[in-house]
Length: 505
Ligand code: MSP
Image 1 (cartoon, helix red, strand yellow):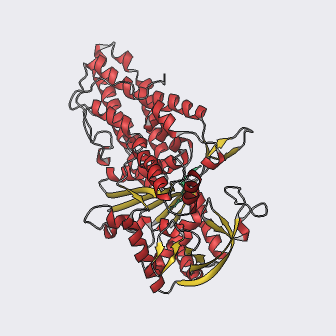
Image 2 (spheres, rainbow, N blue to C red):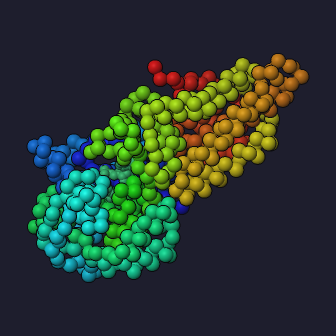
């Protein structure tokens, strides 16, 4: 089965921060998990380079928008690898191949009768690059997200006839109730449609940094249309000489933060329908990472609010696995969640280092000490433990398919905790003192190592670096999900393992 997972493409006017990292990490977990199941996976991320925010930032710096985009795109291109993310392609919307495809698709939308000329007059937030309706603005004329004063815009534009899609969008939400996940965001989008849809600008006349409108070169396409289309255009040129569109479109999961719900749950499917393309299977929404500000209030972490926890500092000190684990464990996916350095350190020490890292090290150390590093062939694992651990793989797969990576991680963690209790209950250090208990000791250690191995396979999408080290020490590097049951892949010998999650110096 083919699976296509995307992240939003990020504005190049700022440096990557923890919020961007969070989306990329979650998306990567889906991609890695599906690869473990042997599925045909494509994972896309990239940068959104056109439009006012970039043009304004470049102007301030006295650079051309393209030069700024080239400079900043690099930070996002290195974000994935630093997070241990496994994207298959990184799209930049300034890529001429994207530009050409956008022009082609939007011309088709016009030919299909969904474009009209009109005058726009209303409020506009240059940071969101969004036209705000009266019901969306706060404190007179401020942006509800950025709190900055909105500008009053009046211009002659081409419009996308969004209003004509009201019924079709309602039918989409009725017929595909899990189109937007989690459900409450589907309700939110549905309520937006029920309030009535207005046509939206398809082009802007006052900007030059964008994709030129082929039938009116004085205008460029409004950046959101150009940006949304990346999810489709990328497939046509990501692989030299190959068009992957039929293989991967429609996307399985389009992962986004809740700030851009309207664009993805309403504008995007309408645009696809207008272009005669299929809509994605699921738009998967996550909440905001919140940080405490000076007054102790939790606020959305964002560059413009100046309260950023630097993912790169954490990675430099603790590694990418630690960041990945923390964000998915601390914040229930789909909800807003507070993050903090203290919370990070606590989870790192108590869960990663202690519950998992130590379990692995101890188990290996005991096999080395009591059995000379070798596990006897033909000794079956304790059936009680096998019965508890084996169903976890299916639970994980279900949660992942339902877009719930935190729930998947929690299911595996129950297994980790079960194994810790098993060590305490079976006390191999006591058994080792009694020759008559040799068979029992062997069963316990076989069970432990087999349990650790199967749990590690399930944790691979979350903490790939540590899992690969651990599986190498067990001599069983394969991470396919078929091997995620206790007895699936026998371990015959173990090698010394350095602490997976050392204390930070
Ligand atoms: N360029 C547009 C998206 C176009 S997609 C066709 C954009 N870019 S952005 O750089 O502002 O990135 C927004 C996304 O970054 C959010 O949807 C979310 O995925 C992520 N996050 C940014 N700040 C975040 C938090 N504080 N918390 C969680 N995610 C956040 O919008």
